[in-house]
Amino acid sequence: MEFSRFNRPTLLRCLLICVTFSNGVFGAFYRKPNIVLILTDDLDVTMGGMSPLTKTKKLIGDEGMSFSNAFVASPLCCPSRASILTGKYPHNHRVLNNTLEGNCSSQAWQKSEESHTFPALLHSYAGYQTFFAGKYLNQYGHADAGGVEHVPPGWNSWIGLERNSKYYNYTLSVNGKPQKHGADYSKDYLTDVLANVSLDFLQYKSNYQPFFMMVSTPAPHSPWTAAPQYQNCFNTTKAPRDPNFNIHGKNKHWLIRQAKTPMTNSSVQFLDDAFRNRWRTLLSVDDLVEKIVKRLEVRGELDNTYVFFTSDNGYHTGQFSLPLDKRQLYEFDIKVPLMVRGPNIKPNQTSRLAVANIDLGPTILDIAGYNVSKTQMDGMSFLPIMEGRMNSSSWRTDILVEYEGEGRNVSDPACPLLGPGVSECFPDCVCEDSYNNTYACVRIVAPSANLQYCEFDDNEVFVEVYNVTADPFQLTNIAKTIDQEVLEKMNHRLMMLQSCSGQSCRTPGVYDIRYNFDPRHMFTGHGWRLSRMRQRMK
Ligand SMILES: *[C@@H]1O[C@H](CO)[C@@H](O)[C@H](O)[C@H]1NC(C)=O
Ligand SMILES: *[C@@H]1O[C@H](CO)[C@@H](O)[C@H](O)[C@H]1NC(C)=O
Ligand SMILES: *[C@@H]1O[C@H](CO)[C@@H](O)[C@H](O)[C@H]1NC(C)=O
Ligand SMILES: *[C@@H]1O[C@H](CO)[C@@H](O)[C@H](O)[C@H]1NC(C)=O
Ligand SMILES: *[C@@H]1O[C@H](CO)[C@@H](O)[C@H](O)[C@H]1NC(C)=O
Ligand SMILES: *[C@@H]1O[C@H](CO)[C@@H](O)[C@H](O)[C@H]1NC(C)=O
Ligand SMILES: *[C@@H]1O[C@H](CO)[C@@H](O)[C@H](O)[C@H]1NC(C)=O
Ligand SMILES: *[C@@H]1O[C@H](CO)[C@@H](O)[C@H](O)[C@H]1NC(C)=O
Ligand SMILES: *[C@@H]1O[C@H](CO)[C@@H](O)[C@H](O)[C@H]1NC(C)=O
Ligand SMILES: *[C@@H]1O[C@H](CO)[C@@H](O)[C@H](O)[C@H]1NC(C)=O
Ligand SMILES: *[C@@H]1O[C@H](CO)[C@@H](O)[C@H](O)[C@H]1NC(C)=O
Ligand SMILES: *[C@@H]1O[C@H](CO)[C@@H](O)[C@H](O)[C@H]1NC(C)=O
Image 1: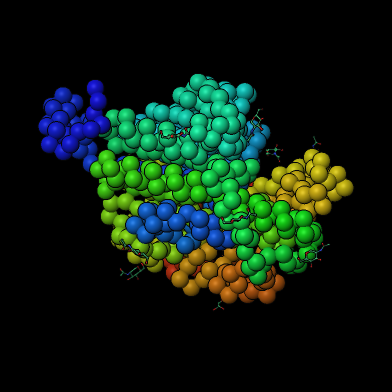
Image 2: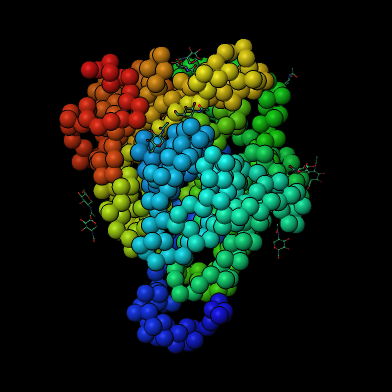
């Protein structure tokens, strides 16, 4: 039967029939809203990453709410995506890096977390039909973890990219069957394929259940292959020369102090090229967003659909003389775009409240009417903010960022000189990561403070603190000058968050008017990597 073209009266008649036959389980006028989540890969917000996305800003941002303080719990694809899917901080979902050993799409992940992701709950308990297309977790499809035959639980329609981001010459798992693609633009360009399969889903899905659709583009991740019609766009654009561009981060942690300043001209040219190519790939993402929104509109479903647009982490090009990557604690890597349109969200709003990628699951479950308190999630629903029924002084004032550096026991072939311990190196031995680039931060966004406190698990137990109000480009580490009492409170708060779970992750932060320091929080729990500072303080 073809249900997709029903007009309203037919639907109403049908509803009566459905209710009669199914006891209301389906309800074409289920009226539970539909939800679309568009997730990009490596899209920054601080370097103008949204600039090429003019239609997206108009169709989602101008029609709803944009969040100017949206953060990720970890600035790396796989841990961040795991946080989105589970609503948990990395120390709770235990996906630590992009490899199978670090639990990225590993069998342990499949056995422990994958069946409780928010899409699985939407599917099993909230009556949603679910559709996935695009990049999932970086190791998805690995032969040691079930290959592309493994379809994660909870998805009615599954079109998952094998492994990491690509634009051509890739394999998709179409409901567990491999589908190989070549390099013909009109058949294979991945961003366009994702748009086409999404439109097909909207056309042929059941009309008797609300739907959740997640479209996860590889763009603007490397290898930055633009569609042919966009290959010459932005050909005079350069990476922004902000105050933190190509300067030496002299009071920062070891890895940053290693970077050579100024960068070589070839590095600058390389990063400017990458910057342009990233923007070019985004033009196809902008087309994808437009196609999906227009199709929802044509089908009369737009008014009952929430559309989320965000990214898994930010990006940097030349900041503190690091050519390009995303594994640092600074705003450019941990802050992401987030905009949402939907029923009961007024147009053209901006919220400055702190939200994180661990909140997406709780928010979407809340929209679907699922009781989030029944889950183990660490995040919280920001639906009340979007609906304008949140007293902003009762919202949380901090979030946790956790990152475990890569490179332990390996020598980067690009830079044998530096020996084992570093990774992601450029030919001139500027490295983007090292095993001791392992840190945890509290990012505070309160009416009275906009601060970041970070601790490294390295030989120096290095601490970085920024007053983001006074110093938005994070040029000056104030760890040595800030009030000692404030420093200690932030250290305690960090320890508490590093061992938090569920409700305890949502307790009042240092700058919350309800904050009440309880020393009992200090030495309880089982932190993921409890800080050495803690040991020192014992
Ligand atoms: C939102 O703001 C933009 C830019 O100021 C304006 O063009 C647009 O009409 C506004 N949209 C709505 C729905 O108010
Ligand atoms: C991988 O996940 C499992 C299940 O959560 C956990 O027991 C294990 O410690 C994790 N591995 C790492 C390296 O953290
Ligand atoms: C795709 O694979 C073909 C055949 O191996 C190769 O010639 C082509 O360069 C590849 N294209 C891209 C964009 O990777
Ligand atoms: C997407 O669909 C359009 C319209 O049917 C078609 O022209 C285009 O070639 C398709 N693109 C891909 C990559 O499949
Ligand atoms: C840059 O773009 C302009 C306008 O599209 C075009 O005329 C020019 O040839 C392009 N330059 C290069 C180097 O591609
Ligand atoms: C690098 O670029 C700068 C600015 O364009 C220029 O002044 C300088 O001569 C270049 N250095 C080399 C070694 O080419
Ligand atoms: C949600 O679940 C929690 C924990 O099971 C329960 O205490 C609470 O009453 C539930 N709330 C609603 C509105 O059902
Ligand atoms: C918002 O919450 C704060 C703290 O709970 C309270 O003091 C204040 O009166 C509330 N404001 C409104 C408008 O409800
Ligand atoms: C990823 O994490 C696992 C577990 O901590 C570790 O064994 C592995 O070496 C890490 N991979 C990299 C590339 O650092
Ligand atoms: C890896 O490095 C750690 C820390 O330097 C060391 O303790 C461990 O023995 C090394 N493991 C291997 C297999 O070399
Ligand atoms: C970080 O690791 C590198 C490589 O092993 C080492 O040379 C450096 O001293 C370490 N720095 C700190 C602060 O631990
Ligand atoms: C941060 O900077 C602002 C603006 O200069 C200042 O008012 C505030 O007191 C500073 N906060 C801290 C904790 O230093």
